[in-house]
Image (cartoon, rainbow, N blue to C red; front, side, top):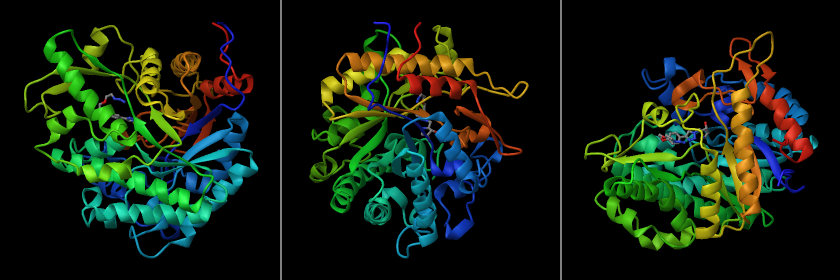
Length: 453
Ligand code: JSK
């Protein structure tokens, strides 16, 4: 097999998220989100950086859509900022917020680009956090109302909806490790939050379909194969436990199996989700969104380790010592991990379709004579697209692939120090400079195939 071509219907795209690119945090009636609060709290983000301006996409979106048009990808994934629609999280609708996304969608359609809309990409309205946030069941109802409000406005033109982005990251980085907003460090809260996110996904999915019968609804999970650091019984047990927390805790209830028994037992002393919610969570998906960057390498560790439950992830130094090449995030580059993950999902869960909703890599790119020659990113993307192709040949129903990200942007706690874009952003001028990877991706999309080699 040397042609490596993809179906004509394959949805190539790029992805972004509202808080990471928009800026304009005080404009047109937007209320504050937990990421405004968190990023403005000293010590929480790299060099105290915030999303106040970000890529200024809120003003420069016509230029960004022109970039998308030049790229020629049939799809684009972006998120809607809940606090632009409901500045207080619930109650009065801010029509100017809806107007922004209404215009964006029209311009995308005008350019022949299919919008994939993420409803929750981590920017909870601060007013809801002040009432307990995702730890409180009441936030579930607020999310469903927000989803309904957006679908009423955009559902005549938007077909593809993603309820949540990376609920594991929201729950654990936001509420257990405290590295993301709202910066809570409590495992019981994290597990409660994970459950409320899943319930809200199920209820929102039902609500979206009721308002827009042709809608295709999914959720984007951060999934990774979990690799034990050694063959020892303790490392293998640690890997099994982490697979439960990272992967099966979300996949099993979404696919109608309820929470995994081993993980339920592991977490029971923190929070036991009511079984009665599992039918709600199991609302059928139209597609499973998969965000893949790297496997998780796990070793057993004494209680009181950062993970708190007898295990830890290998450090970048340990990964390098094992011969892995790393990205600027310190993540091992393992394209086979994506193929293995996709084959496992197909074998164990039989999703109706899978969309790779994020894949990409950060490298420390800088322009040289006006060009950004990001060969490491091209190599990363080529190897991962090849892995998707192998999965397709193995019968996995992969319907699309989105590069994270269109633009360099605000990488959460890392601020602007990590560049994931296929377009370079000069943060002093906000100028956009397409990188070599942009041209490479444009060619792959135009040919519907990887180059030979
Ligand atoms: C990038 C996952 C959503 C979009 C992008 C970070 C992430 C993560 C970050 C897990 C995690 C930390 C801690 C240790 C090591 C290996 C954003 N995705 N992004 N995706 N996932 N884990 N690897 N992924 O900016 O907004 O755990 O993890």
